[in-house]
Structures are given as structure tokens and as C-alpha cells.
Image (cartoon, rainbow, N blue to C red):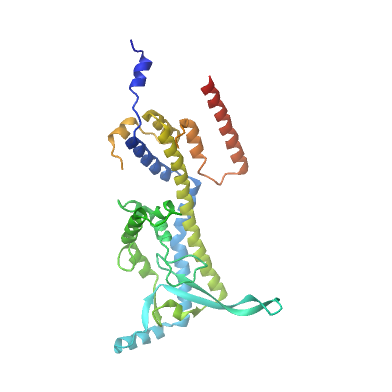
Length: 338
């Protein structure tokens, strides 16, 4: 005759790949919603983006309008509209600004000397504009900023993934990456539609000259130049915050998937979820659609994963956490022996 314990073991639901995928998907959503230090930093910087772009744009507009006055623009449009062969003015969102500064050179005796030099950089206000302070190309695009800024909007679309560039970092181009970057870019739009069109139209001016912004480098003050460099750096810091947050989640998901792969039963996986703050039942996993080989104790694995976020902890906190982890390891080892 079977005991209650034996019957209970027989009713345990085995964990198959479908269930593992469902739980992993639920955990990814849960981790993205957690109020971690990494997410807080991302949210904090995101809230500042409109202001920093608007303030930088005011500076850029002042520089441009000192060089190309409103009266100049009016005359240029008059000539362009009057003569078919005149094409001298157009709207643009990227500029080359420069100021007269100094740089170090060495003479024939290899002695350092300071000489006057034109310091020039490219500043692109388009949504996909490069924010790399070392990049002076007029043709560089960078989608990281748009993906970070409109992450929620992209996340809400079925075939878009705002984190794709982070997930694919270090990998060669592949169909998976191409699919999502193409979908992201199509949804955001450029000069033709969507958020890209709205953004680019907000940050554009009438400029006189040839088609390429490098052909019309405009003089500014050193202070204005430095302010715009800080603007590019602030955009880069926001992108880095997005990357750090998502990388933290990816690190946790890697551990979670290793653990799920080692578990045999659904209740073990659900225990891990509970330890990580996600309360779901076996019925939810069985009913819903699905969108390492070391077996970890669920509590142990949960603590390990929790340690992958809020990385701004003090050294004392890290030592304390390590001592606690080692103590737990000893306790579990003792239980296994006995």
C-alpha cells in the first residue's frame, strides 16, 4: 500500500522545456520591473533627456544664427525660389562647430611646443545621431540612444526589441539581430514617419551652403563648444545606464536558465521564482502559452542571482553577503551529508 508521501511524489509535475521557457519569460518580465539601483539610474537619466537636448539645441541655434542670420536665410530662400538652378539652403540637424584653441606639437629637437589650432567636432541632433565625442564623421549613426529613450514604446510592439543591441553585443551580424533592428528602426522612423520624424523636425534649422554639414563648419566660443561636448557625454551616460541595467538582467537570466535546466520538477522551479519575489502557480505555467547542468538549491540560486543587481553596494556589504553565502553553502552541504 502506498503512503501519502509516495503518492505525493508521484503527482509531482516534471519540468519540460516548454515549462522552462514559460518560467524564464515570466522571470525576465519580473526582473525588468524590479526597482533596482541599475533601473533607478536609467529612469533618472531618462527623465532628464528632453531638457538636456533642448538646452543643447538652444546653444546650437545661437551659434548658427550668429553665422547665418534670419535675414540671410530669408534672402537665400528668395534666391532659391526665384531661380531654378539655385539650391543653396536646406534644413539640417547636424553641424560642425569649431573654435580656435591650442595643441601640443614637437619641434625638430623633440621639444614640446604649444601652437594655435582649430578644434572641431561634429554635433548631430537627430534621434539616430552619433554621441561619440571622438567621432567626427558626418555619416555616423547610432541607434542605441533611440532604443534607450523609446524603450517602453518599442517593448510594447510585438516584433520589436529595444535591448537587442545589448543582447547581441560582441556577436556577428545574424538574422535574429537584423530582424529586430530593422523592426525597431521601422517603428521609430526617421525623417519620414514616427518618433524619428517628430524628433528630427523639432531639432532642425535652415542652413545655407552645400549638402554636407562638414562643408560649413561654424565658429563658436570655447565655452559653447565645451557645453555641447558635455551634452554628447550626457547622452552617452544615459545609453550606458540602459546597457548596465539590461546586462544585469541578462546575467541573472543566465543563472536562472542554468538552474531551470538542472531542475527535474516544476515545484523546484516555482520555489526559485518565489525566492526571487515572483509568485506564480503551476496552473499559471501549465495553462499559459509559451512565447549548465549543475542542480542548484533554489534558495542558494536565488541569493546568487539577487547579488547580481544593486552593484553599487559598499565593500562591507559585499563582504557580509559573501560570508552569508559561504555559511549557507556549509549548511546545505551538512544537510546533504546527513
